[in-house]
Length: 404
Image 1 (tube, rainbow, N blue to C red):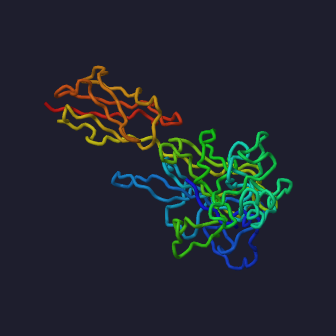
Image 2 (cartoon, rainbow, N blue to C red):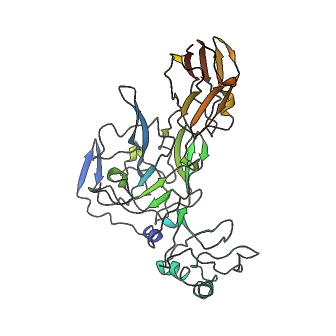
Image 3 (cartoon, rainbow, N blue to C red):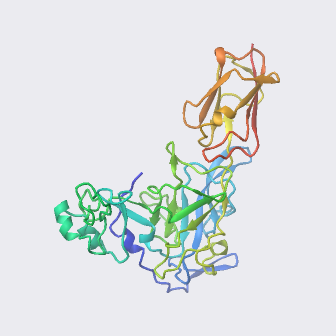
């Protein structure tokens, strides 16, 4: 997944909004905030909110998805939307980390070059670069760029660093910024690996560097009208870092039943050189220690398995029909072998398990038929794990009786 990049993206990151006009204030509980149209620039950059999707079980037992503030709150948030999140969506969750003022975008994102320059085709933008610096390394043929974007200039970008050269470009010369439409701006940008770290159960969980991004716009004002490409409402609070987990089988996947939080690389700072921290409750008028984001915490939903074509304890199941199930997250390659069955209380092993589609599985009896009028118990034990090695909190068991 790639996204177009505006020419000003990095340069906004070094501009701080005025903190004047603090007379307008609103109160949430006992906390007083500055006007929500201004950025709060006192002290280090602070996480004001962390917003995400969670699974919610309603009174009828139906599962649905809802927005929630896992950290911080907002005076316009609906009742009950700000609380500790214990069932964060494990698949395709969009996590928005809202900061009280601007960070230096150069330390969060990098731009794509026309060719590999070192280990890949991406390069960081030097502090102090202007849109003109990007343009002179983007517009023109390789011969033109070699003159306009010399490797000897510390403000040049996309300079070949490989001893053997980068294709037809020698080491120390520019390969050029990827700019197919020749508008002078990089076409593609991505999050710098390690700039923002998603930590679950003490382990770093990969994020999607292409889908995740720095959003150097917005404030605590909730827009009245949704804008193109943005969720709208409370999902436009900013400035913000938007994080997606790394894609697996077409989905952004988090480990299930895991305690998660965020850390930032020490290089991620505001224009004063201060690291990000998380104040109590997201109250950015309170102090926090630069680099300390330990107060941000949420838990992901557990693995769930549902039968697709029968209810637990059903009778009269067609004995020639496979048993089908739906799992809420991708499962590990060895998970299918962990499933066990009994037939009328005795071990039953004459079956095969297949996964026809992502998240789906089917149990088929060898020979094409289960026994008639038999009780089958299907167990998904803790060793039936997701791709991170996390199984259900307790074995998931189904009972079904075949017909004649």
